[in-house]
Image (cartoon, rainbow, N blue to C red):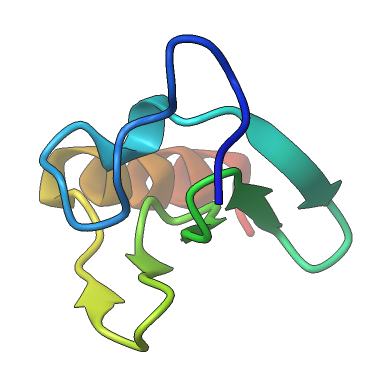
Amino acid sequence: MCSHTPPCPPADGPDREGAKVVARDSGVGFSRLCNGVLLFEDTGGLQPDGQIIEPDSASLTGALALRNWMGL
């Protein structure tokens, strides 16, 4: 799928988020990576085969604390 040199990490690899962003929709809150992974603003995502990538709990906790602080 990837034509970059060096190639982007595979979707099932531990470094999958290092792939290049090929599309972004800030209104919906996701980015599509070159390896087919969809990443969401909450740090969760989907692999091309539909497997769920659980959100990073530290990032999610920080985002929730910020929302509470801002009164959202």
